[in-house]
Length: 317
Ligand code: BDR
Ligand code: CA
Image (cartoon, rainbow, N blue to C red; front, side, top):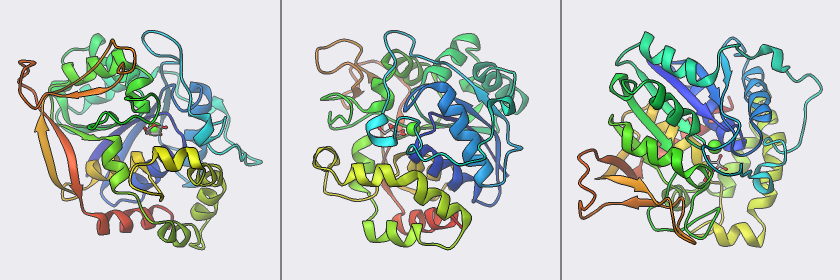
């Protein structure tokens, strides 16, 4: 059994990533921790419970975490994910926040990893505030992780939030800095440009959503807003290498659930720019080794796309 702990800012691609994990055999989801990001943390909690309800998995514990970055103001990605983070398409019977665990997300991360030393893979598909706070509370945490899988950062200084910044890193640069510098465990990065170069064709998306299942109907409903946004001129410009479905967070999840998914990666020390007029939040790849860091992250370059399509299809079965 692969034990996973997932940290999300549940927008539509986080929802897809969660559903992918739930559909993978021999994967145990120990909990889902929520953080600000695509929308306010209260919405993130509601959205996560709603995804679990759609998958009949409300028994998985959900924890509320940080409501803002370590410094500065909270961003959101309402233009793409909808104001509520899930396409502004509510269901009549949405689960209430009374279903949340009382324990905070940061304390749950520390507890669950310490209860399962060496066994937990942590998947972060959101601003890294919860993870940064957790390592400050318990510096031994990274040494007890099996692996860390992050959707975030960029490799060609192409942003989707600022000129040079990807959303998850730009929404909390200090947290990204702490995590990339302090989590000295096997770390895999699914960066923005990589996800753009590996988008799925719209024809795949049509077939994916046309599956005759409750999960597919749920996804079609919450995804409509983002699909329409993706086809606008603004997003077509932002999405490098043409139009198509980019399920950013699902690449990090697929790497965590299946060891053979990543075919090729670069291994370099990485960090994050914290100052700069246009570069705050941009990931730095130290190809020359000038930062004197020993820890190197795996920057995912090539994955098994045939396998990815199968996993995505299975997520809505
Ligand atoms: C990331 O930002 C969020 O909007 C998505 O959910 C994804 O985690 C992509 O930059
Ligand atoms: Ca996300």
